Length: 121
Image 1: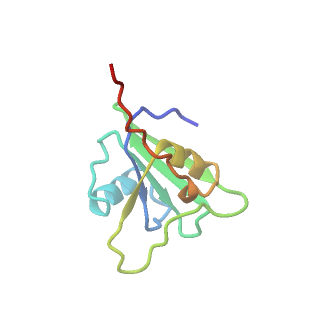
Image 2 (image 1 turned 90 degrees about the horizontal axis):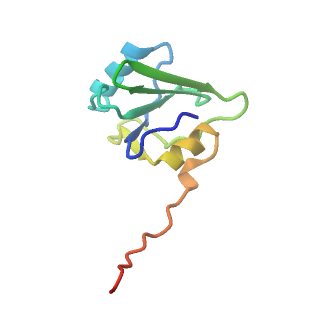
């Protein structure tokens, strides 16, 4: 797995896309559906209709990088998308992205509560 820069925004497109789309077609999805900038350096993750394939796309400053993964058995866990839903994307953490690429249900990962302690002195 590629080590993503700390703080990189990761966007999971909720609706499936046509996997015949390559770089330019996915950039159009990013602009028109997600209303984001494909040159932002953020990572965008898409799935096919069957749910067994993923494509991830990001701009690294020199060109687009695409990652493609196919599960031989099973499907990737994905948020449900019904016709008419207005939610087009989810933000993922790096841990959730790693779990997604491993075929693990990333929706069950929970962040521990933040410690709000301060040093006294």
